[in-house]
Length: 237
Image 1 (cartoon, rainbow, N blue to C red):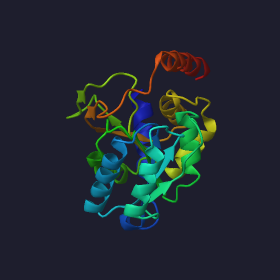
Image 2: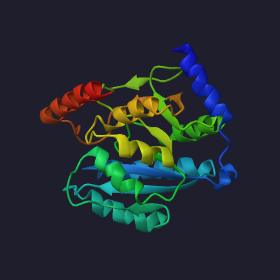
Image 3: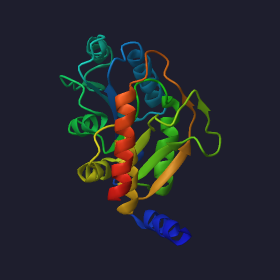
């Protein structure tokens, strides 16, 4: 296992840097939403603040799945406030699953890097500049948040919670093509496929906080689907 890790690090160090400076890089945040009317303004404000303070070029793509609570209307207001070059509302008519939300969102992404995260404030955007620094440091294909290293912590977090991740856009596109999961297993499957394809992965310790407003999206049926998806993933990899 150690030799495999070493070879991946060697591959990362040998890969030529991306053309241009960091100022020319652009980061597209994919933000799937469903009933996030209360959380959305705050997560967007925190994202804008974090990117602006670090002079990072960005766009935030909101993929709302027909939320009945008015999330789409809130997103439309945010688009007016911050501008359509920064906030891109790309809604769908109904709830179609997390995996398909990313497939839909990446079609509209103009950045050369893509960040995927929850809109429920379980991940604080203040960690994103550290993800970007880590990616530049080792020229990694993927940088993932982890609660198991360094100063990472967990507050009201459970095993169903998804992780914030930074991808090279072309890597995420390739992984999306390979993945078969559509629900909450999707992010896990992407990392499994990434290791199969020998993409380089690094981690940043972050703290997780349980959702600020609203109820968890995972009902009993979705938990069963999650477990079934895990079994399918284990059987096909």
